[in-house]
Image (cartoon, rainbow, N blue to C red; front, side, top):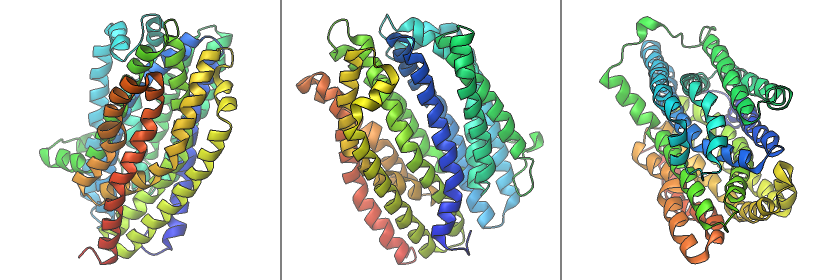
Length: 444
């Protein structure tokens, strides 16, 4: 980590994470594509459930990044004992929180769906999809933690195997449950729950392999010090994902509110489709940036600031170029891409095409904010990392999704994400320049 050329290291660490992120995003896309063959309401129901899943991801990433960032720095400083204790507490806590969430939400699915922004006609579909997802919450949450712990201690390959295996299983089970067993939306949910449980088991097994931090029940000794370290390293991820959830809920409400009468389900479904398309495109860049994280953490822990800066600039350049290419293609072929999910609904197709083109117009700009945010998070500059993490879907998106539709109606809803991405870029730029200069000067 501290000797090999950083470009080679970032690429080597990024390949497994890119595969894992793309495959994970792919089964979300496949879910939407299969359900789209059934009904618009089913597609909208999946969109509603996305807000709950982002809350699960928020806590999983919080404990995963919080403990994982500490682990990478501790291993760089050769402090294996502290890394083991933090890893165990970081894994056990989301398991307990997940059990609590499932116990509270399962008896109240309709109230949960309504709270997440489901119009009345979409509530039954949202309930069907949420049922098994909620039951699997402890495993989904802690699997995300394990994945990030393994990746940030340098074992990205096995972290990839765990996530990809679960995703592939989900893709196989989807048509079996949805169509062969005629379970519909519930079948997609059950397939996801089973695949998440399978991935959890593989990732847990990964912690028993050589050169990995081994988890043990006797090391589960929560303390304020450990939670403070997790808090410092994971707070940006927590806020980013929580605001993602808030943004998803706001988007659901706004889509239904500003759609023409009778078109509420189609509008919610259109935004659900576009969200999954953009998540799939962004997953490659996110995977590449996550390949940068262990390189950053190890070299920062070893005080090799020049290598940190070099890896940062390399990651930023590659991410920006990729997003420019993929956004151009998405803008040109927007109608064809949206039609892959549900071509039978012309309202969905029209709303989705315009929304996708607006988002593609500003999509390349998020490379800067994403890479800079991950750098600050790994070097424990919690305040700027948190600020950048909540910029896109918090500070800028939430006001945009409220104010723009007041002036432009449904078009304002479609514009909101692009406006938020532009503002986040402008916020990130001075931070990126400042930290690059600090690293070049040896963090003086």
